[in-house]
Image 1 (cartoon, each protein chain N blue to C red):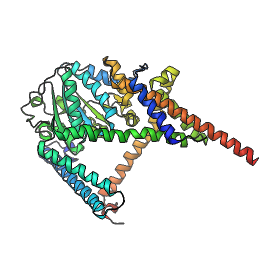
Image 2 (image 1 turned 30 degrees about the vertical axis):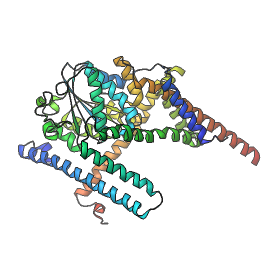
Image 3 (image 1 turned 90 degrees about the vertical axis):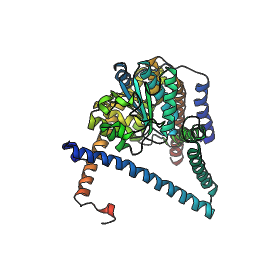
Image 4 (image 1 turned 135 degrees about the vertical axis):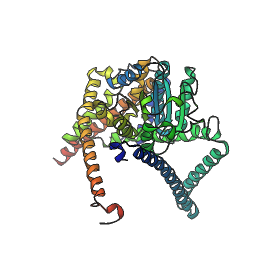
Length: 190
Length: 270
């Protein structure tokens, strides 16, 4: 992968393209491992009837129904598989995600307190960004969106850049440690 | 003062539902990063190829769909050719549906004006593979037709034939597009991400590695203004505005009761 970047000879490109193909093939097999694990864990809970086993049964049934529908009539346009996806899976997942709004509101009321100087700064910043990112902020005062954009484009981005540079340096140093054999904990060694 | 959490839930439910049912029409302001995406598409010539990647799951559909709709409307109104696929399995059916619906609005023909390639696992390999040979990564489209036979895809070899890539995502997949398509192949890239992910990509915007950023419902609403076609983005922003106000009101209320409680406690101990 690395060599072909610097030596664009056709033999290296050929090897590179094959590696890319193999990456996809291996990934598909890892999906199979995931499905097998999912079936194993849920089946065990259903067979031992531990608390909440009904949910595991529903999970297993969902998997089974989608697999049967997919293999029996395909996954394309106007198929039962697509209907199930569009009308059951997608709305259910969107609903789960939407519930966050309710819990965020409840948690904000209970936990977002100006207990210290730092917490007060955080609270005020959050309030400005929350107002500045919605049209009503502009209606309250035209400078609120500008202030929110300034927070996002300068203090927030500076912190984000620092994190990204830290991650980059950490990745390089860890990779070097693995390549040079210094880091062996991933093999279960000290 | 303690408010029962069920009252908070009801307040939030109403603050979201009422603006969605009765349109308020709060005025939106177009931000620079959204205009950059608009300009990146608008400056393309007729028949240039845009690649739209649906890199999201079903859970973020309410936020993703308005962005995808607006961007695709712009592409088709400009008579650009659109190639699309999904790098996350759940985005596959959603991407196909959105693309078909918007293409039908503009009476675009499948195979000539747009093509949907379906899902490809292992996004790193897929993104890198597209830099070498699209037909190797996608020998067939979503319908099982050979990409070497479809009029649109048969003339496309790799990123050299694609004018702009747009990643519509709800996670960190745009980072992979930046690392592998932009950095490795110098592919022009724009992204449309959920609001919670938008701040992650601001550094890439200022470094010029992405040509623009559409962030969440707000971004979708702004894009709808730019293309002159109101949609769910604008309606969603009304709901989001009221919900944000309610949350801020609750936070303020929580703090007032906290300080009152603290004052009473200190009086009691004094």
